[in-house]
Image (cartoon, rainbow, N blue to C red; front, side, top):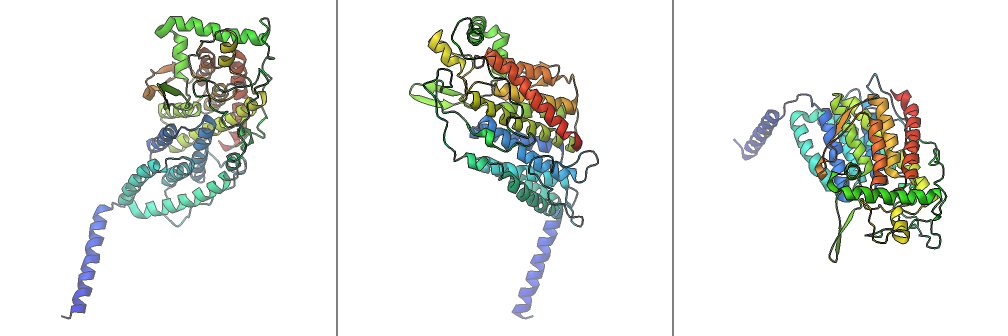
Length: 448
C-alpha cells in the first residue's frame, strides 16, 4: 500500500473518529429554556450595574432595551401578546425567524437579552463568562438548533442596536455639565460627603419609549421657596428635620428608619475613612422594582412569555418615569433639605440617608415606584400580596406588602423619613409616576 493511500485512510479514520466522538457528546434533544434562565440573565445584569455604579436613569435604559429585544422575538409566534413595534417610539418590526431553520425562539430571546445587555454595560467580560458557558452547554445539547437560534438572535440584536442608537443617549454624553447657580438660594447645590456634580442634567432629551414628550405629565410646581417660618416651604423643611430628629431618637427600633433603609437604593453612597473615600455598592430604584417583577412572576408561576412580558412592560414604565422625573428635576432645580437645614437650622445635622447628587423635586424613587406599581398591577392584579426580599443581599430583612400600590406608597414616604426629600416631592412624585404608569398601561393594552 502506497504512503499516500495510507495517509488518506488515516485521515478518513480520524474524521470518522471525530464524528463518533461528537455524536456521543451531542444529544440533539431540543434545548429547553425556562423562566428561571431569563430571571438569571436579568439578575446578572443587575449585579453588573451595581458593580459598574450606573446612575438610576442610565440603569433604567440598560434594563429596557434587552427586554424589548427578547419580547419582540417571542411575540411573533404568540397567540396572546402582540408586537411593540409602531407602539414604542421608533421601533420597527424586527426580522422574522426562518421557517426552514430550527430556530428556538426562547433560546434566541435569551441570547438577544444577553447580547444587548452586553452593549450597555461596562463590564462586558462578566456577561461573556456566563454567556460562553451557556453556549458550550447548548452546543452539546443540540448544535444545529443552537447555531440557528444564535444567528437569528444576532440579526435581531443588530436591529435593536440601530433603533437604540437613535435615542439621543450618545449625544447627551457630550453635552455641557450642569452649572450650579450659587446666587439663588433656592437652587440645588452639591451635597456632602462627595459633593458630586448634578447627575444626568440632559436626561429629558432622551427619546421616551411610550410617552409623547418628556413633560407630558409635568407636575405642579413645588411650594414657593421661602425661609419665612410661616411659609408652606419652610414648614415642609422643618418637617423633614423634626421627623428625622424624632425617629433617630428611637434608634434601631424605628420603623421609619427601617423603611428608609429598605428603599435607599442609592448607587452613589460614599464612605469616608480617614483620607480615603470609596463607594458602597447598592441597587438602583429601578432595579429594586425589576426585582419585584421577578418575585411576582415566580409567585404566579408565570411561563416564559408571561415572564418576559412583565419584565419588558415594567422596564419601559421605569425608563419613561425617569425621563419624566428628570425633566422636572432640572426645571425646578430645587435645593435639598440637607443644605438648607445645615444653613438655617442645625449645622451638624446629617440625614438618615445620604443625599443623592441631583435636584430635589420631584422624588425619583416616588415617580418610578408610582409608574412601576401601576404597570405591575395591570399585569398581576390589585391586592397582589408579596414578600419583598430584593434587599436581602444587602443585609436588609424582607418586607411584606398587600399590593404593589402599598409598596409604592412606602417607597415614596421613605424618602422623607430618610431626610432627603420634602413632603411635596414624594406626594406629587408618586402621583406623577402613577399618571405615567396609567398612560403606558393604556397604550400597551393593544399588545395584550
